[in-house]
Image (cartoon, rainbow, N blue to C red):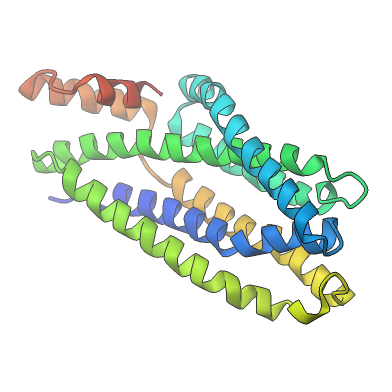
Length: 244
């Protein structure tokens, strides 16, 4: 007896999310330098540094909020909410990447980081549930196999995404020789593809996560069955993950 469906759906969710994010890594930088800062590389690098700091700070601050949301509405719906929040934030880049108001960039990337951090946190929490579901069906604990498979797929997906990022930049018509005098078509395509690609990945990820059949009620039942079989064996870290 196997339990392939939940782990396959979870892996499809995280891989589509990771690929969509990594494919636009280059476009984010070039949008900042060549659209917002009109080709001023030094100024653009400064704002990119601020965007990185905002991404990190907001990412950390957002984790408790999504943990509370998870406890209220369940992990799957909290993860779907984080994906939806990220979609809104990527849509907002069309207006928040504004040459007149470059200070909006760290705010925008901070909120994007908040959604991404919540997605990674909730993915790990649901992965712990998938391992319990697998044990129920196979009577084996296969954390090592599951984590190794997930880690490889995520890294492979990100490698593919980063590999495609340069191809996407070339497809926009960007010409490094033009400097800050890029054509309107190239600037439009860079701005258009930057939110569109990750949004497609996020929508696919939301579809996959909402199909995972591990509701809060079902996981409570599974935990009770497993503990009646072999008692409580999980450590503090696993307990913290499942409680998110």
